[in-house]
Length: 227
Image: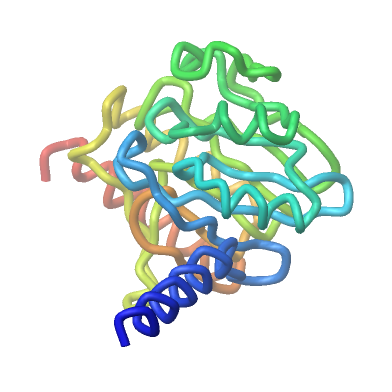
């Protein structure tokens, strides 16, 4: 009986390990295996014909790496900011992937192969745009995919129950006024999904998402004023 329980436990663990990346929508999946190094931040996998992407990084788990290999490996590891790099270097080494991070947060991943500079958006590849959004950290960036999915790191999160967007005032390490201005700039971009490192995901029509973003900016301004 003990041996039977052991086999069942092993089979169950194998099923859990091979369940990730777990599909969310279209080509976008959740990596799982969040790392203490990044305070439990969520990482995402994007399957793309031009090369697969990982946004931020989970704990390095060989079984996850093998599953990613089965899905075509990784070409890019996009790091939104310094807090959530976790084991990005190990995934990059395993797949020969290029790590992307802004120069202002480069000390968190000094070996990154592509360093973003300045405040202007950058087209990294077809369908992918990096948008600098300083605030949570000086070098924080978000990644926009297909003008539909926004990978937001610690800049922006949502609540599916209320349909509202929010930002973390108590965890703004650089400048809340800068984060508010960065949030305002995001209104120029269409997207339907908010996929954060911390907090909840949110899926809304693009027009409604823009309305919620405008409402959030107003709330952020009041918080910054002490109200």
